[in-house]
Amino acid sequence: DDTKFIESIVKEISTIVRRVPLSVAKYPVGVGCRVEKVMSLLSTGLNDVRMIGIWGTGGIGKTTIAKDVYNSIASQFDGCSFLPNVRETSSKSDGLVHLQKTLLSELLWKENVVVLSVDGGVNLIRDRLCCKKILLVLDDVDHGDQLNALARECEWFGKGSRIIITTRDKHVLTSHGIDQVYEVKPLDQGEAFELLSSYAFPTDQTKDISRDLIDNILDYANGLPLAVVVLGPFLCGRSKGEWESTLGKLAESPMKDINSVLKISFDALDDNEKDIFLDIACFFKGFLRDYVTRVFDCCGLNALIGIQTLIERSLVTIENEIRVQMHDLIQLMGQDIVKQECPNDPGKRSRLWCYDDVFEVLSEDTGTDSVKGIVLLLPSQEELDISPSAFTHMRRLKMLIFQTAQVSGGAICLPNYSSHGGPICLPNDLRWLEWPECPLSTLKFSVGPKKLVRFDVFNSRIKELEGNLK
Image 1: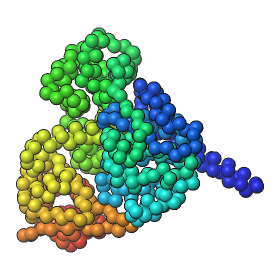
Image 2 (image 1 turned 120 degrees about the horizontal axis):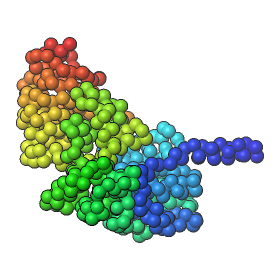
Image 3 (image 1 turned 90 degrees about the vertical axis):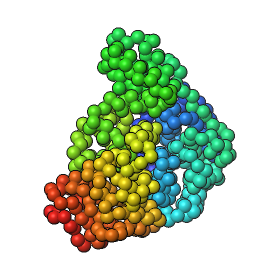
Image 4 (image 1 turned 180 degrees about the horizontal axis):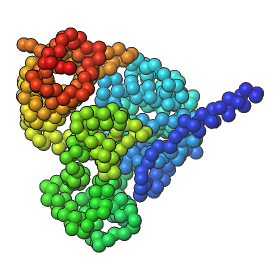
């Protein structure tokens, strides 16, 4: 009996230690009343197993509400797991397997859970959690396959369990048999005003900014918390004339959408901050901050002040104090800015990250001086054909990163790279080269002084470097 008593104490202490509250929002305006409505759907006092949905458009606050609910009720369960960015993670190679591993690790309190396939993960979740009262949040789900892999049936989980799913697509919920759904409504005018004021007027002094001017600007936010949160820091400390100028820019936009609102904040950044923002949006969302900082510094950018400014402008966040994150709508806005540099010719854009664009530019030798960076996670089943002169005209290329995809069981499948007609010649302005597992036998650099700072070709087949590289 003493042993059981000690085990219960250890379990309770472990539970307290492991349940670190999730960061919700700096100013949770309007969150409380919405959380109450979700709580009424959950009915945590009942002993059934229940799945509920939180549904709404992007930037409406679904994740914020789910985090607040999670923090409020986590102590009532034997195990808890909050899986963010399910849509984005599952789209990557072995993404669903990674999500299953994370789910099992957090709910079973085991660090090294082995999952070799989605089907294997399904069996593990069903068999290991069927008698355990758990709280599971699946954030940003967009496909039924994700639910089938992570929470197919209520019977997978123990009595009293609660599963919360956030999504932009209500059909994902109804097709899974989830009929208890909370639709998140936009902020009303009073809530939007309070949220904007919290950011724009932190000292409660509105100076000479009239309520009508504030309301006119808020009309373009359409009650979306994300838009208000981005506008607020941008407008903070600005004069009445600058507020009116901002309203004028919003009015000029042919589309009264969130992109035009978010772009106002981007346009006010300096060149250093714009480059860092676009690199994060196109290349480095979800990467470790230390790694991203090293890349930026090596490429001649001021990473410390640049990233901090983006954080202060609510364009970037730091997850768990180590990982660079960005709301997907802000990311899409950044990527769209790059695509609009030359919609029909990727070789004339500043950044390349999509497989099709990279393949076209490198195989057809259509790159230009406009290209500053190429970062590609190449799927193991794809092939990349690189012309020997592919980089000849990319004289401003500063970073080139090719990463191979990881597959089940920890093995690595090397993608197929090929170069016909001689070695690939890299530009002298290149600062950061990262190409682990490079299958080419020779790399060549142009004649003249080099600016290369990072040369990472770990486990490559390179036998010769041409071009007087020292």
